[in-house]
Length: 168
Image (tube, rainbow, N blue to C red):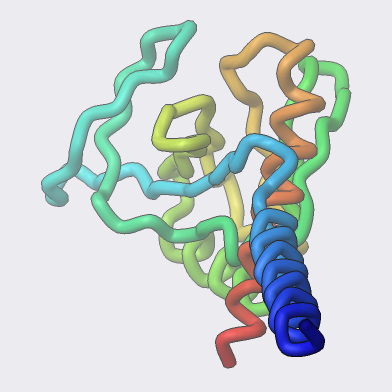
Protein backbone atom coordinates (compact mmCIF):
# COMPACT_ATOMS: atom_id res chain seq x y z
CA UNK A 1 0.00 0.00 0.00
CA UNK A 2 2.81 2.39 0.89
CA UNK A 3 4.50 1.51 -2.39
CA UNK A 4 1.36 2.51 -4.32
CA UNK A 5 1.10 5.82 -2.45
CA UNK A 6 4.79 6.49 -3.03
CA UNK A 7 4.58 5.75 -6.77
CA UNK A 8 1.37 7.77 -7.00
CA UNK A 9 3.10 10.69 -5.30
CA UNK A 10 6.08 10.36 -7.63
CA UNK A 11 3.70 10.31 -10.59
CA UNK A 12 1.98 13.50 -9.38
CA UNK A 13 5.33 15.22 -8.85
CA UNK A 14 6.50 14.20 -12.31
CA UNK A 15 3.26 15.46 -13.82
CA UNK A 16 3.65 18.72 -11.91
CA UNK A 17 7.21 19.23 -13.15
CA UNK A 18 6.13 18.38 -16.69
CA UNK A 19 3.26 20.89 -16.52
CA UNK A 20 5.55 23.53 -15.03
CA UNK A 21 8.05 22.94 -17.82
CA UNK A 22 5.33 23.28 -20.44
CA UNK A 23 4.11 26.46 -18.80
CA UNK A 24 7.53 28.03 -18.85
CA UNK A 25 7.98 27.38 -22.54
CA UNK A 26 4.58 28.85 -23.34
CA UNK A 27 5.52 31.96 -21.39
CA UNK A 28 8.16 32.59 -24.08
CA UNK A 29 5.41 33.09 -26.65
CA UNK A 30 5.01 36.67 -27.75
CA UNK A 31 1.89 38.46 -26.52
CA UNK A 32 2.10 40.84 -29.49
CA UNK A 33 2.42 40.38 -33.23
CA UNK A 34 6.08 40.06 -34.22
CA UNK A 35 6.78 43.14 -36.33
CA UNK A 36 10.15 43.12 -38.09
CA UNK A 37 11.49 46.35 -39.58
CA UNK A 38 14.30 46.18 -42.14
CA UNK A 39 16.03 48.76 -44.30
CA UNK A 40 17.16 48.44 -47.93
CA UNK A 41 19.35 50.86 -49.90
CA UNK A 42 18.27 52.24 -53.25
CA UNK A 43 20.32 50.78 -56.09
CA UNK A 44 22.47 53.09 -58.21
CA UNK A 45 22.21 53.22 -62.00
CA UNK A 46 25.04 50.70 -62.38
CA UNK A 47 23.65 48.25 -59.75
CA UNK A 48 21.22 45.45 -60.41
CA UNK A 49 18.34 45.84 -58.01
CA UNK A 50 14.81 44.65 -57.37
CA UNK A 51 11.92 46.99 -58.02
CA UNK A 52 9.66 47.78 -55.04
CA UNK A 53 6.66 50.10 -54.86
CA UNK A 54 5.41 52.29 -52.07
CA UNK A 55 1.84 51.25 -51.24
CA UNK A 56 -0.05 54.54 -51.59
CA UNK A 57 1.97 56.75 -53.93
CA UNK A 58 3.02 53.85 -56.14
CA UNK A 59 6.55 55.27 -56.34
CA UNK A 60 8.90 52.64 -57.74
CA UNK A 61 12.36 52.26 -56.22
CA UNK A 62 15.06 49.83 -57.30
CA UNK A 63 16.74 48.43 -54.17
CA UNK A 64 19.83 46.35 -53.52
CA UNK A 65 19.17 42.84 -52.16
CA UNK A 66 21.23 43.40 -49.01
CA UNK A 67 19.45 44.41 -45.79
CA UNK A 68 21.43 47.21 -44.13
CA UNK A 69 19.68 47.43 -40.77
CA UNK A 70 17.54 44.79 -39.08
CA UNK A 71 15.54 44.27 -35.89
CA UNK A 72 18.83 43.66 -34.04
CA UNK A 73 19.99 47.21 -34.85
CA UNK A 74 16.88 49.03 -33.58
CA UNK A 75 16.84 50.28 -29.98
CA UNK A 76 13.38 51.77 -30.21
CA UNK A 77 10.77 52.96 -32.67
CA UNK A 78 8.39 55.83 -32.01
CA UNK A 79 5.83 57.89 -33.89
CA UNK A 80 6.86 61.52 -34.25
CA UNK A 81 4.69 64.43 -35.38
CA UNK A 82 6.14 67.38 -37.25
CA UNK A 83 4.97 70.01 -39.73
CA UNK A 84 4.88 67.44 -42.55
CA UNK A 85 2.83 64.86 -40.64
CA UNK A 86 3.47 61.63 -38.78
CA UNK A 87 6.64 59.64 -39.27
CA UNK A 88 8.53 56.78 -37.66
CA UNK A 89 11.66 57.49 -35.64
CA UNK A 90 14.09 54.57 -35.37
CA UNK A 91 16.84 54.89 -32.73
CA UNK A 92 19.73 52.59 -33.67
CA UNK A 93 22.30 50.79 -31.55
CA UNK A 94 25.76 52.31 -31.20
CA UNK A 95 27.30 50.00 -33.81
CA UNK A 96 24.41 50.51 -36.25
CA UNK A 97 24.72 54.29 -35.75
CA UNK A 98 28.32 54.15 -36.95
CA UNK A 99 27.24 51.97 -39.88
CA UNK A 100 24.47 54.45 -40.71
CA UNK A 101 26.95 57.33 -40.81
CA UNK A 102 29.28 55.43 -43.17
CA UNK A 103 26.36 54.35 -45.36
CA UNK A 104 24.85 57.83 -45.64
CA UNK A 105 28.20 59.57 -46.15
CA UNK A 106 28.93 57.47 -49.21
CA UNK A 107 25.36 57.44 -50.58
CA UNK A 108 24.08 61.02 -50.41
CA UNK A 109 21.14 61.41 -52.79
CA UNK A 110 20.01 57.79 -52.53
CA UNK A 111 17.05 56.49 -50.52
CA UNK A 112 16.72 54.05 -47.66
CA UNK A 113 13.56 51.97 -48.02
CA UNK A 114 11.77 50.80 -44.88
CA UNK A 115 9.96 47.46 -44.84
CA UNK A 116 7.84 45.92 -42.11
CA UNK A 117 7.34 42.17 -42.23
CA UNK A 118 8.52 42.25 -45.84
CA UNK A 119 6.09 44.98 -46.97
CA UNK A 120 7.47 48.29 -48.20
CA UNK A 121 6.04 51.12 -46.07
CA UNK A 122 8.26 54.13 -46.72
CA UNK A 123 11.54 55.65 -47.85
CA UNK A 124 13.82 58.52 -46.91
CA UNK A 125 16.38 60.25 -49.14
CA UNK A 126 19.83 61.01 -47.71
CA UNK A 127 20.56 64.70 -48.20
CA UNK A 128 23.62 64.54 -45.94
CA UNK A 129 25.46 62.04 -43.73
CA UNK A 130 23.43 61.06 -40.65
CA UNK A 131 25.60 61.15 -37.54
CA UNK A 132 22.94 61.18 -34.79
CA UNK A 133 22.14 57.46 -34.94
CA UNK A 134 18.50 57.62 -35.90
CA UNK A 135 16.39 57.29 -39.01
CA UNK A 136 13.22 59.31 -39.51
CA UNK A 137 11.03 58.09 -42.32
CA UNK A 138 7.57 59.05 -43.50
CA UNK A 139 5.52 55.96 -44.08
CA UNK A 140 2.62 55.22 -46.34
CA UNK A 141 0.41 53.66 -43.69
CA UNK A 142 -2.70 54.90 -41.88
CA UNK A 143 -1.85 57.20 -38.97
CA UNK A 144 -3.99 55.23 -36.52
CA UNK A 145 -1.92 52.10 -37.22
CA UNK A 146 1.44 53.79 -36.63
CA UNK A 147 1.39 53.82 -32.82
CA UNK A 148 0.75 50.10 -32.57
CA UNK A 149 3.24 49.39 -35.37
CA UNK A 150 5.96 51.40 -33.61
CA UNK A 151 5.27 49.69 -30.28
CA UNK A 152 5.42 46.23 -31.86
CA UNK A 153 8.62 47.06 -33.78
CA UNK A 154 10.24 48.17 -30.51
CA UNK A 155 9.11 45.05 -28.65
CA UNK A 156 10.20 42.73 -31.47
CA UNK A 157 13.62 44.41 -31.67
CA UNK A 158 14.12 44.36 -27.90
CA UNK A 159 13.25 40.66 -27.70
CA UNK A 160 15.50 39.85 -30.68
CA UNK A 161 18.48 41.62 -29.06
CA UNK A 162 17.84 39.85 -25.73
CA UNK A 163 17.62 36.43 -27.40
CA UNK A 164 20.81 37.11 -29.37
CA UNK A 165 22.64 38.19 -26.19
CA UNK A 166 21.68 34.91 -24.48
CA UNK A 167 23.38 32.95 -27.27
CA UNK A 168 26.74 34.60 -26.65
